Length: 384
Image (cartoon, rainbow, N blue to C red; front, side):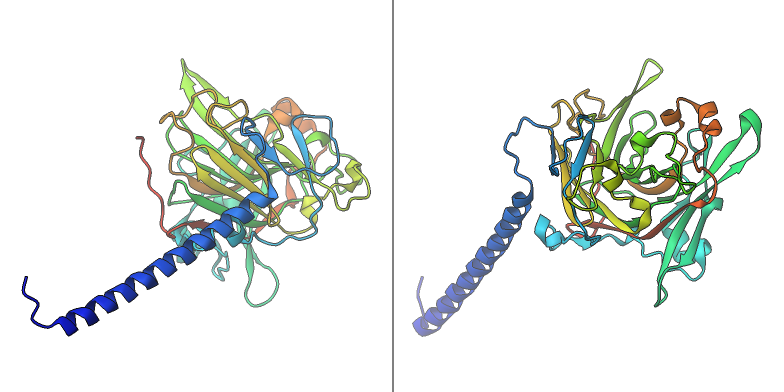
């Protein structure tokens, strides 16, 4: 090759070298930030034993029950600082998120564009629960036009055919991992199930992640203890994998450390010192990291990690997932209430209980729900 203008080539090469140096500096800086995020993420929960499927942050209170754990005292109700957990660059997914500030309520076009009034399909719920948009509303919450979604339950009918109409909304869009869902919720004064969750749609082969499932206060408004105090003032942080086999629906969910309580202060470990979740708004979040890892957060703090595909109390030890490799299916976002009569031993016992199950005291309020992914787009997945 004949070089006609050496000076021009030298200048051109010098500019190219400068460009390379800038790229290297940016790359190193990005890696340092990513490394710092990972270090921060690892600092709160130490995975000292990789054979454990469940890793929880615990207080010094020993609850003497493997299904329970007590989280450390946390007087904040803040949202998660996403940069602490490797999500500083993640973007909000508009199709799955909502501030619920609709002057026009549930008939507002922007609301109906995102949400179904009811379940993701024609299924109306496990009787006596009937999920309906009739039990959905909005109310003002503070100043500056802030509003909250409300869900309420009302008895309908009488006798053995009596039903409980409960509020439910579900997104029209779906997404798979990696995904972070967070909601600011005020639990109802009743003993009904209040839930923020995700579920896939394939009949008989569902995958489900429960961000929040809780059953109201242990002490009712009448001053008496509720009929099933074991579940009260506790948060159920769990997931399910389902499979239909021979006409039977098989349902797996972890059993160890799935029910969380938290003390108001460190003074004692009595149940009377438990946080009463319906007294204030709290933020609940779940990070769907991968098919084989879920992380749970309450009021800005990570409280639990579930991992391991086939480990006992892990993601899918029974091999129920269709793809066979954990939680992969695209899921809808749901907010709901339900009777969940299994706690009482059946429908008759539920109706005969003196627990609050209908009317104004069943009101659950959701200030907002926010869902993030690395790109801010919906994640699509198919079986490998």
